[in-house]
Amino acid sequence: VQYVWRHVAENTSTPARLLEALAKNKDYDVRRRVAENTSTPTRLLEVLAKDKRREVRRSVAANPGAGSVCETLANDKVPDVRRRVAENLSSPAIVLKRLARDKEPYVRSSVAANPSTPTTVLKVLAMDKDDWGRGAVAENPSTPMTVLKVLARDKESDVRISVAANPSTPATVLKVLARDKESYVRRSVAANPSTPAGELELLALEPEVNDN
Image 1 (tube, rainbow, N blue to C red):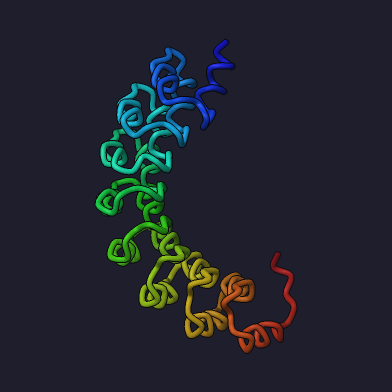
Image 2 (cartoon, rainbow, N blue to C red):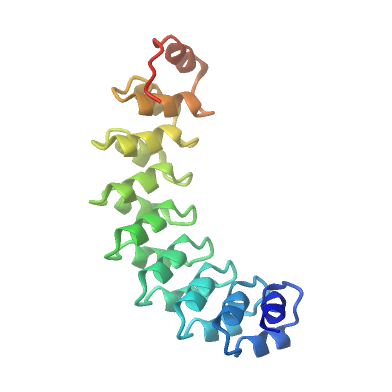
């Protein structure tokens, strides 16, 4: 029977009154599926955001309809719940700003990778001490051109690779990265659809090196 309940709980056509009943089910996996159902009403997500099981709260945090509920979950003691909030495109700007100061690097990097993160917050995260965070800013399509220019000079090649792969990176920056000492950076420039034809011709002249 529980398997049937689980499927009903995740069905987007399930009526709100039935979802409300399933949200009280003793099986946490049933509640988890209600929590991740995009048809679940906000008032019910608010209740599930306080569930004792982290799996349920994590599903609420990832729900596109969570919106204002994310403000509560941004204070969750479990880092992975906060990470889901940081990844959620519907998280309010004020929540993303708070999580940008989270003690966990992977929570901050999730904020940095979120296209909904305000540019003011991305500018701060571009100076993060952790290269994961800077790399996530570098690959974010919403990152301002001025920030990408700075990250293109980052000491960590992984960050420069992310800038080189970002379709939003301006041609002037790609031109510089096409001459980077690291072959993986140049490879990312070669694969970037925004790279100017002239730079692609230059890269095509490189001697073939088997560096996998």
